[in-house]
Structures are given as C-alpha cells and as structure tokens.
Image 1: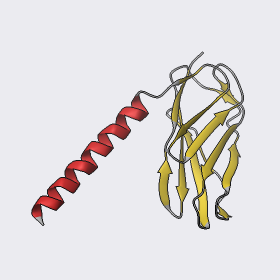
Image 2 (image 1 turned 135 degrees about the horizontal axis):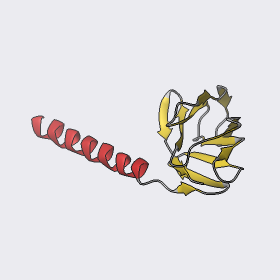
Image 3 (image 1 turned 60 degrees about the horizontal axis):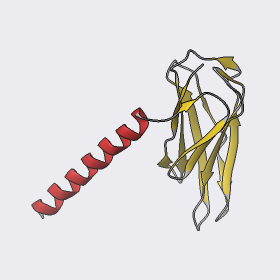
Length: 128
C-alpha cells in the first residue's frame, strides 16, 4: 500500500509541475484570439493591451453539470461569470468585460468549474 501511495504522490507532483510549465510558458496575446486548456477556452476580441470583452467557454461532458468560471489578470482585475446548469454535451459560454488597458506583460487567465471541480486553466500574456 505504501508503494501505491508513493507512486500516486509522485504522479501528482509531476502533474502539478507540468501544469506550472503550461501556465508559465503560455502564449502572448498581441491581437484577438482564442486559447484553450483542457475543457476551458478564453477568447479576446480586442488588440494590443486593451481588453473590452473576454469570452469564457467550458465544454460539458455526457451529463448535466452546474458550470461557472473565474477570469482574472495578474495586476488585480477579476470577475466571476454567472453560474449555469448546463445540459449534457452542451458548451457553457459567458463574457467578462474588463474594458481597460493592461500593462504589457500582464497575464490573463480563466479557470472553469464543472460540478465544483476545476476543468481547465488557460492563460495568455497581454503584449503591446
């Protein structure tokens, strides 16, 4: 039993390290675009350092779930999206409206939650 626990702890640590690398090495947003991680995507519609609207989508599975998301930047802006009960095989979508310029190098992230569990965390660096 001790060996199984030890292997599980090693696997969890490796997965956490890999996730950290994905977040740290995320792409740059120099214009509108879409970035995804697992079941969550963020899409921007503006260019440069201005973000007027950010769309978050969370892909649902083969059963109904309660879904919501949190969107934030590394310089302190954040917003929670509405919570919605989503039918099986449907994609949840909602928008956040920062409506401001952010300093170049600011990270924009969104974490989606399906049934209370995190199901993806895409991040992108805002550049000028």
